[in-house]
Length: 358
Ligand SMILES: Cc1ncc(COP(=O)(O)O)c(C=O)c1O
Image 1 (tube, protein in one colour):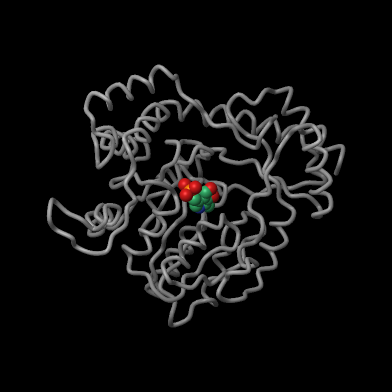
Image 2: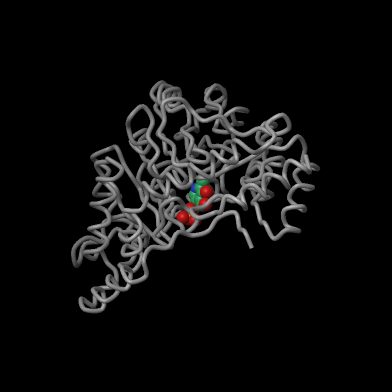
């Protein structure tokens, strides 16, 4: 079977060496030495000042909202994974959906201003497929209206924009280190903040709000990650440049083989170093998508409808919004298999099946 993704695994012996160390120390979690080492290496690798390694890419969104004291309305994108919106609802805020740009599939920054109300306190936008949002426009709007900016950078590990880590934009950025991501720690995530006064609070928020032995500062949550997860991160991190290069090669081969007269894909922003996190293609209609999907599945090739459906259409959203671009793209977009070691023959076969069914 060829799945949309295949988890990268490091050398087993290397991971086991870390497991021996954990056994010897008998410290399995609670800010252990491997976690601290991973945080140090991640900060260096990503060139960011403050980063906390947490349990996943969802709880870090909740921690970000909590740390920034976000309440009321949060402007967000309907074209993301449900974790983005769910975190807003979970924190008792209301998602206000702003439609996406038809070229990049990121939130359309030109539509944000008209969605702002007196209740708006923040913008939570996703760097969709790791492709940067219009961070300059978003920052200008945030300054004008005194809003906080949180970027869901679940897909954006290692991406730079204008020579800077994409995580260095906005007030807080988050990332997911789930096993399906470019860099993973089995489960995991990180919160990266560019507001120095927030750092201690972020650290405490992921640890119940509990400091030292006896001080309980506020209602935090358990967002700590374990030594076992940190060990996987430490094994994988040195491979990231090679992982990105291998993904780039798959990406470029699809670029060459697919029939672009009948397909399109999101436009990458200028001035970036990309991580080739996903390979989404958009069909002319949902009917064509379904035909292609069925033809691939018949050959045991499993692409993913990602993102689908448009989040504004989920039944549990507190308010109704029309987002015609997101609704249209989400029914026509399919992410194709993309991972390290996907053989060239298979990329050719996948491309042939797609082209034949357009
Ligand atoms: C855009 C986006 N945000 C958040 C998440 C949640 O990450 P996690 O699975 O680590 O909780 C995902 C997961 O794929 C995602 O795609």
